[in-house]
Length: 136
Image (cartoon, rainbow, N blue to C red; front, top):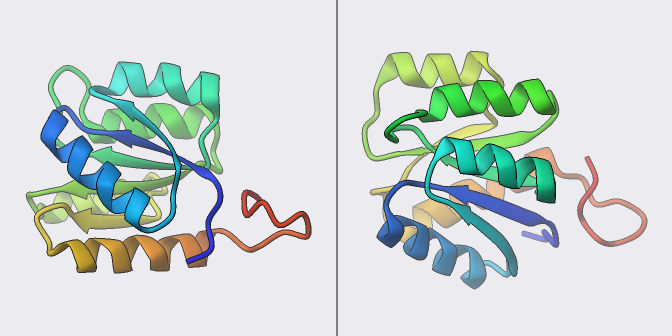
């Protein structure tokens, strides 16, 4: 994985954000923004314009599907990876139809999460000529 971009990590559980953040740093990602809910995620997305969003499905107030819909309204090309510990078929269908790039179980072994994220990044981001890895 060759990714020098930034990632917005959205999850209402602090320990999950810490776990995924550590995993991302292990993969070489050093620009990570965190949000505990959908509303803050939208504000951070507008301010920071991260290259990729990792978005929890089940959150209070504004769930992941609502947040995904709002992010796609801001930027139809934003790359969003859905995270969940519950594999609900309808949620996967909804997320895919709204343009989610992937759907990762956050209770999977760390190496599986890392592999799925690396594959998504490789599929969604082509290296550009400037070498910063941030262009589609």
